[in-house]
Length: 97
Image (cartoon, rainbow, N blue to C red; front, side, top):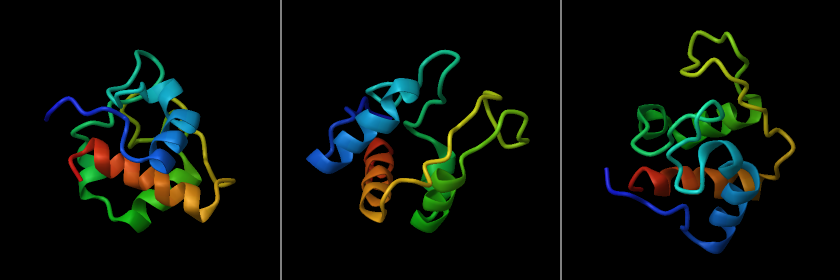
């Protein structure tokens, strides 16, 4: 997978930097003991936008059988529809979409 910048368009990159980069890194490749690599991520590539939206709104608790790092993925249920769409667009961008 090519090295992709977190920069997609202004709205997507702003949302990503504000809510995701502190754990997943500005390049989306994850930070040790904080967040999983989002680049070339099978979950993102195989999930529909609706599934990604649901995941972002619910998050994931440590101990979840689906967790790769056994860390908290906070719920972003307070984001607007526009912000969630921008976050999903950024996830797609980081995965070649």
